[in-house]
View 1 (tube, helix red, strand yellow):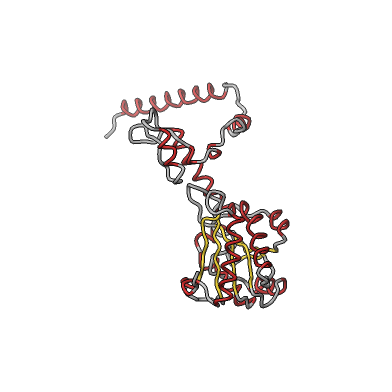
View 2 (cartoon, rainbow, N blue to C red; view 1 turned 45 degrees about the vertical axis):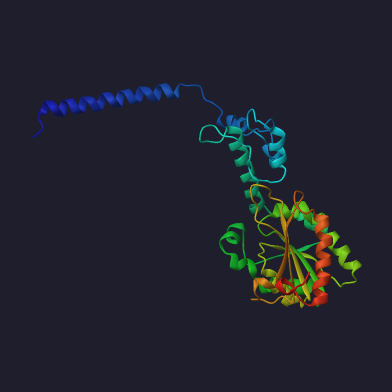
Length: 299
């Protein structure tokens, strides 16, 4: 049984706390107001911040007092691996960590941004999409990135030349950045090379949310002898601009991956787009002559 005195003490404590809380709120209400939106705008103003990705990772060197800096830098020129980035105890130094985060952001942007409509118009490429509705679905449903709606198939049939020797198309894949960086150089190079070899080329176009096996559907729809797709590679921390080219002779839905021929690492730090274009045209010529691709193609 609680005594009357105990109850009085409890009530008094509650009342005192209520009074203290009220005084605290009054003090806070009398403080000068700050413009939160203005502070937020000032926080996101990054015009004076350095672009950490402007320096090539091969030129980034953070080892203090190295015994042979020249040899170390020469080693770095032969690999995009993160060597010579140093540490603070078991952790990265601040600048090294920020560079890692910046390169990771570049990779994320490559995956989740879209190829600009202006670029597609400039290159004269009409656009269709696979069954994926957005980037999130593209990442989680690879199977939908291999299929087209009947409407998209009809658009391809309507706008493309039927039964070409070579059908080329472009796809964002896992890096729209790769398309933006390379397509202006590589596509004209391939087209010129195929023209020089006297090959009949179909109508180039663009596929959004595309996976590599989507080329097999296009090959069947257009009855192409050789199908070529220029597609963005999965980006890493070294670059977000790397593109691949997949080629197949007589592509069919469900065919084994061993029937594809691929050239990868197409970017300014690997095989240049112009050089790759000339090489692709030569390989396509060999495919048509040998009527083969993938492991069956002898190069």
